[in-house]
Image (tube, rainbow, N blue to C red):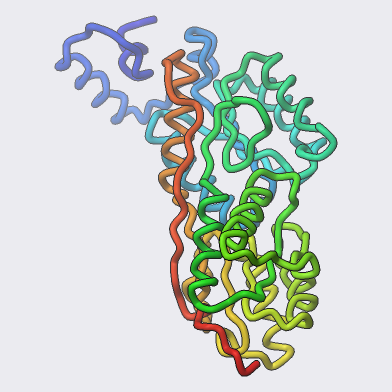
Length: 325
């Protein structure tokens, strides 16, 4: 590679700093843009990364993409973003597409469909066959794949303990797909907290849903009919659905029942009744996911199982149990 190319493409070199500065100043004046294709041919690196998420309209994933992209851009990488709509076939399709685009690695949140009927094995085989560095983000399959996630079981356990401390014994939960580690872990955490006081959650108070607004509406109708004193939704979108049902039934939150979500997406703090929820440390998760992926790309030995704590954010929607209801 030429001297100018070494400098402008940030390749390791022993060129004097004064020469580097002159080259960069000249490139700025000429509005020089590096040829990514030529660079990838020379270095066998495309300086690009694929991001695959199941639902880009979900605030958690939208914020995650934003933070991951910022981290990658700061490290000189461009990104391709793919939305799978929670479909297994789209996981496969986009992995193959990104491989064909010669990305250096992938950060992927697996679709709900890919965690059903051992579909995840096809994902694992495809990633491993192409020897492509990857990091599983938020959701992961069995074994020891490189992954970054929040400790869902602990966070949900702490929510349930908080509800118990507020006097709530009759609670309802709206889960996400229980094939996902995130949802299964949250349900296990709730059950663990109630087992400690020798109380079991009634099966009719566990609504098995999806991570969306419509599951919140559907689950809310059932759980409020069961006269629960609190509803714990496994994401904030579900909680918004419960809020709509409560409004239609002229129920007041938290006077008539308490409501807790999970994720702490933007809107949860600006609603008329601000939502108590679990904040996922998205900025830190993104930083850790990018660092892990870049270490894998550069063959640096590193911790490949990164679990971060959630944080309960207490707002208007939580109160002591109302025994008069």
